[in-house]
Length: 302
Length: 302
Image (tube, rainbow over all chains, first blue to last red; front, side, top):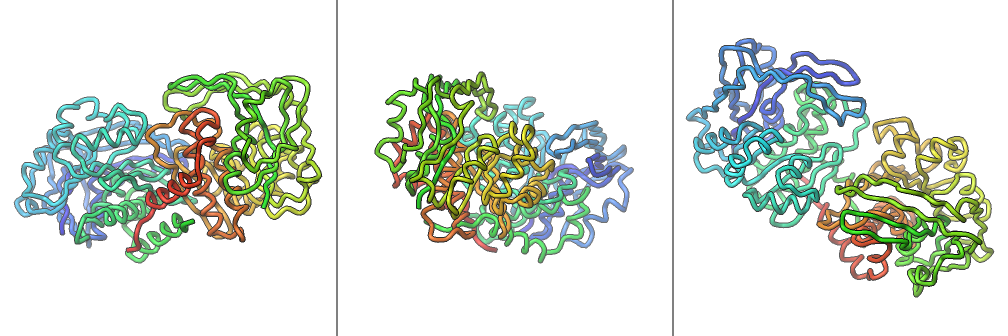
């Protein structure tokens, strides 16, 4: 069952202690779509400028990613430039040139409107609701947001969250959104706003999920080489929702497997710049690392 | 099978956002002993001053904790004073009065020398080796250390680590000791120094264990109320080693259960000041939370 994703397709320029990647493919919808496409067809909605080249598009080719909704506007493509310090945890944004993304108004093509799953990437919560107004009774709506919207448009964000099933944010955002430092209290407050399921991403410290069934904790895979964390969160979301879309039922067991599948995809993403690792990733590699996640976490009863 | 623990018995004065505890029982050996005593007899070696009162000793009473090795010296008991900020992650040491602990030279009583398990609390690595010289072929030696010894006595620490089976330290210490930021690389470097098993404590982010069998990740229990984190690391060590001491075999499965048992004990420790929560803790409560850890972490194969 297909997923509609609305977000950014961008050029990223990234400096890490290990090297520099200049104007490579980035953006939330890019990472999300390629990750999700391992499991299910993806309907992509985003905007690029007239500078967006065929070589960037190649990342989507040969995959079940429908680009009918990839709008091309006059102007330049969204460009993000960032720099990571030695520990790869601290990220500094050098510049954000929104360009054509600044006036992005997502138009959902007719053929996308029956998408059974929706991922609202990190855009203005008003636009997120406009997307929901254009789709036809989806089974599951998942959503991302960020500090900019939490502080800048809190009321609009609340209105959007009331229509969301799964919210995926990081721990700092969960604290900011709830006004609670303790993550368990934060989760209760956020779930009261609408999302039945809250997924809190903690980077190298893994993921906490809060649902009707209680809490679930999954570690990040302990990698010896983390090359570039850019896109890991969106890749997680793509693996998570892509896997769920292929499940007959969205129950607690499926949600937990989806969290681990998201973590699995994210663990590959960070092994190279841009979408380089995801592009050469295979399903057997994915399944193999999922099994390693089980080996990493299993322990017996006493 | 009994455990010998050598460390500090102290008075702590702690300020948290939720209140203040003044001159309450603290010290690594205190937390360790009470946690371990749920599983196995403990032989305690530490020093207190002539100000150390009967009310503090009460924490050890009625438990299989042998206090024969608790030396009483002329002077004042070790006193640590600390303050936690709102997030309970940042700890500021207000003052450390070593007092009688400054000239502590652990003497292992004759009846302790056949202890099958040894926990070397965070003391001078030279003294840690002197302890090992006084014991008779233990089955397992576990050890803690800190930044002060890592930078101050690196060669002595290396000599001690060569005789240690399990090292339990936090992530910052693992990075400092190895000179590697990446925790997987850090673990490889540290295990090459001697300890076959490395347990990296990450506070609210759980624990990573590295052994011959690979890596194991356990989360911290997501608590709604964290009251005072003081002693959580030593309580973890007590639960970990206490549980292991009761296992017929120290294999990977036992080590993993021990990590979760340590996390279980630590999750209770932080619910109150000092040893207050551990003192009223029951074995059914421990077993119940261990089962919650399983529920928190289990997920199915795909």
